[in-house]
Image 1 (spheres, protein in one colour):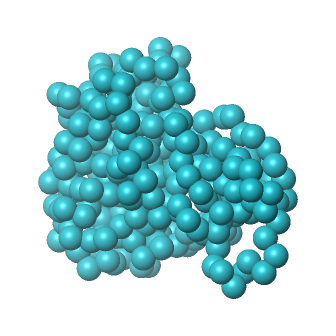
Image 2 (cartoon, rainbow, N blue to C red):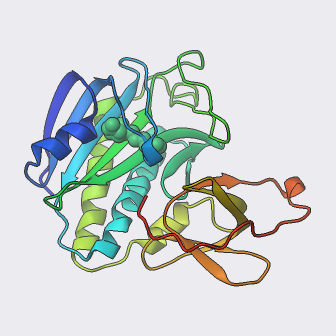
Image 3 (spheres, helix red, strand yellow):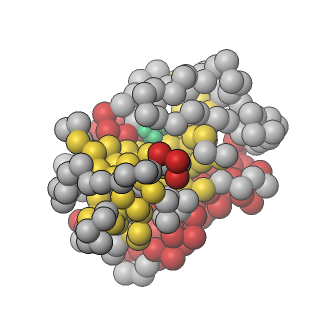
Length: 259
Ligand code: BTN
């Protein structure tokens, strides 16, 4: 992939900009600061000025719609590998693609599509923010962290960007060629094997064990009836064993919308 990188001091949202520009595959927009950053499931993504690596890439995947769900998951793998290699930190992925360090959220990823079929994958990674600068965790959401809080205050954002793009480009090539990135994703996914509660759109939730990732990148949750349910959108809460005296399904939907 030949990435074509543009850097701006400030914009609303790099995802919104690339979706609207609808440019060439490989366009990368980096913003030193976003004033209206977008998060998953309609949330906002706030980062203090000059304290984060916030960027989006535009892809024009030549693959069936169902396989496109792998793009944000591949981006999570790319971030995890770049942080491991560049910062010597151990991170994990909470399905679908929250990048965690010590169970706190270091980076988030949002994939969106426009009418022309372009997929924009946006990545927000907290780099220099202090505890005081990060937003508080909302109800049920993860406590944020940053590379500085994790003991890596001197991280070079440009080097990290280059490493993420390099790895993402390679994983994208694999997907474009019809290949699989499931093994790579599973190797990073700390959700698998855990008891989890899935908070679904529409104020529903279900509880079970995360037992796998299916061929579309959906999380498989198995409840007491032993039948896996495929989840394609929702918030995952990793439950502690002590909270699981009586795990039961609270609903059994099959959710088909993408996250
Ligand atoms: C999430 O965890 O909710 C996803 C957060 C994604 C944030 C990034 S920052 C760069 C890109 N532009 C946006 O407006 N959002 C994404």
